[in-house]
Image (tube, rainbow, N blue to C red; front, side, top):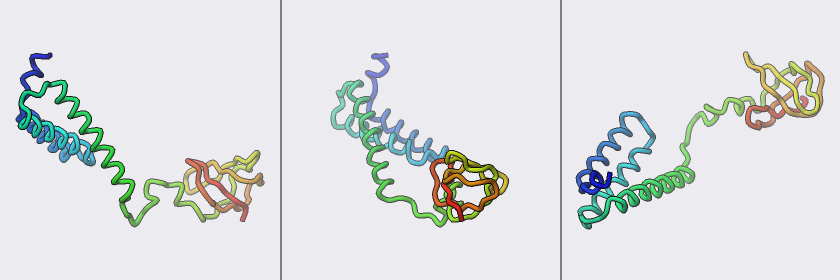
Length: 149
């Protein structure tokens, strides 16, 4: 193993960088492999400057580069969220906020059920009998928070 890694040179890292970036484009990994490729390219550049760098140090720099770039990318995504015309697209329950439904199962001890289209949802709210009209005022995971209309 040491013999194989001891023969690493700069172009190995550049080749790995290109392969990782092509992989990201072909499988649509949302920039994950791009950052790995950039880290590999940085190690390749360092190998040009310091050709006698040990393979252990090369892999250490590669790993640190990946982690650093992913942390920076994640921070960037938090500060610059994607603007969309359908913000609740993958949050189905949030689309029901403000809608009114009839209780399918009485709310007892704060829990009950309501039928929404072809699905039964658990609801949370004050105790109410079956058939009472309730309005969805919030969502907690997969539980709709409701109040009497």
